[in-house]
Image (cartoon, rainbow, N blue to C red; front, side, top):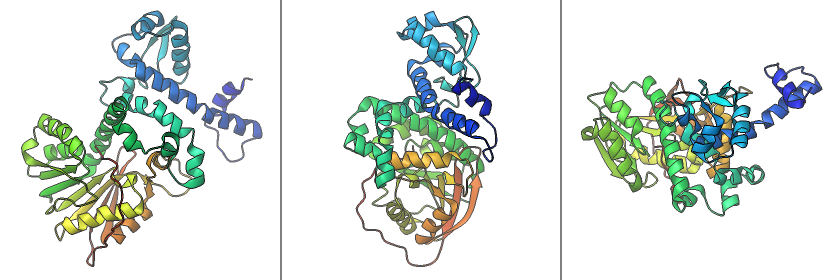
Length: 371
C-alpha cells in the first residue's frame, strides 16, 4: 500500500503500542502538513473561495479568472479536496465545502488573510531557519532576513498590509470569544493597552452602555481605531491615546486589558508593561489578560504551536497558567481567575496586591499591538 494512503488509514489510532509501520506512516502524514499549508496559502492568494461563493465552477474557468495553468490548478484543488477543502462536484469542477467557507474574504470567520500571511515567503524563509531558534533561543526571522519582523514589515508595505488584515481578522475572532465571558458590569473606565484598531473595546462598549474606554497604541493605529469605533457607534465614549505602553499608560482606569500583548514579549518587558499599569490604575482595579494558556502535560493544544511561532518570529512566548500567575505576582497583581472561551485563548483576571511596585529600567524595543 502507498505510504500516504497508509497514513490516512493510520490516522486516529492511539499512539501507545502502535507498531513500527503505523508510527512511521503517522509521522509521514504529519510532515505532509507543510504541503497542505502551502496549498491553502496558494488558493487564498488566488481568491478561489471567493470565486466559488455562489456555485461550483469548472477548473478551466477558474484558471482563466486567476491567470493560472488549468492542469496545475486542477491538481492543487484535487489535493485539497482530498483533505476536505473544496469538493470535486463534477468532472474537473469544484465547489466549496464547509471547511473551505472560511477562505472566503467575506466569511464571518474568514481566515483568508491569515492563510496569505502564514504562507508568505517572508515567513517560510524564517521557518527554514527554525533550527537556529532551537539552538540559540533567538529569532529565526531575524536570522533569515537580517532584521526583526516589525522593521521588515515597515519597509515592505505589501506584506505589512496582509499582516495587518490577518491580525485584524484574528483579533475579531479572539475578541468575540473574550467579550462573551467578561463581566464588566462594575467597571466604569476600561483602558485597552495596545488596543490596536479597537475591535475589543468596540464590542465591550456596545455591550455595556455605561462603560467608557481608552485605547492606547502607536500613532499609526489611530486611524483604524477611529474607523472601527465610529462604525460601531461608540466613538463618543472612547478616548484614543497615541503612545508606547513601555513608557507609560493612561491613568485612572479601574480595569486594564492586555489582549495578545504579553505573548509578544519576554518576562522582563512584560514586567515593565505590568508595572506601568500598576502605577496608573485605580487602587481597586483589575488587569485582564487575553492570551493563550499553555496546558500542562502532553495535551494537544494550539498554544503549544503558537508558542513556536512566537519563538521563531519575534522571541515572544506563550505561557502556562502558573507562568502567567508568577508574572502577575511579580508586578504585585493577584491572579484570581482563568476563564476559558470558545476560542483557543483564555481570559486571565487579576487584581491589585498591596506592596511596592517593581520597576523595570531595561530598554526594550516596541514591536506591535494586539489589534
